[in-house]
View 1 (tube, one colour):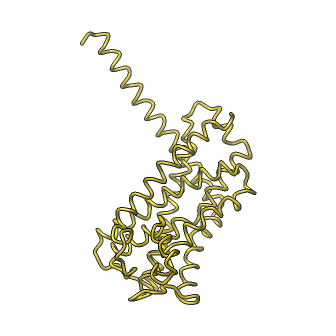
View 2 (tube, rainbow, N blue to C red; view 1 turned 90 degrees about the vertical axis):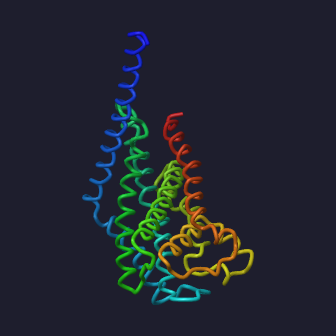
View 3 (cartoon, rainbow, N blue to C red; view 1 turned 135 degrees about the vertical axis):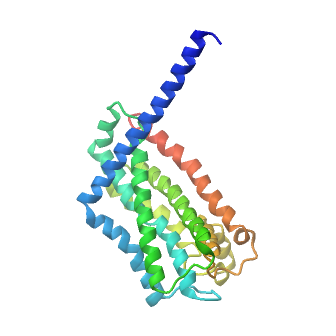
Length: 277
């Protein structure tokens, strides 16, 4: 290898390393910006943590859940509510994105010498940190109302990993929908598109307790796959099984989020880059 070629190769590697470091630094700066909003708006953070707890207590003690379950209904309901929590709370992220768009904040960021995707990455990292906090609160409340996991800490951590993977995928769905909405007042209308994922699922009842056609739809819901998979990992009661979707829930709990991320992540990044077009 000639000296000129070696120098060019070293320069390319250094530039590549510099770009990666630049991207990480910009993304961390945007993450810190989002975390600073928590300190200035603590009520929103608290509401985001308390709302799923209220739902869990309501369905466990008042409305009732676990229809069609052969076993402890609380142990069926809590994993489902953990999965549902990962789909809820997207409104905060969607509002933050649309507010930045409406106030021209993102336009100012785009005019600065920074990696264009850092704004979205910072938003996603902050959201994932809040999701970890929400899971910790929900697991604590679930434990208080009688839920337990039975397959050891490794399986429990695997279940938490599947929950966060599902949240990551739903987050990019929310970011894309927020940029499609464009305005904060449109978020509620667009967010309705996410509701079927949460409520047409096996969070509150088994597919066997539903009409045949509805049960088939529910079994192939991404949230149902995650809920079934984490019930298996936690050692909690679930559906009777016997279908391909229920017997391969762990596979679907990984495949669905990866597929959603593969679709909505590039869509969101592409739309962000072309906001001025």
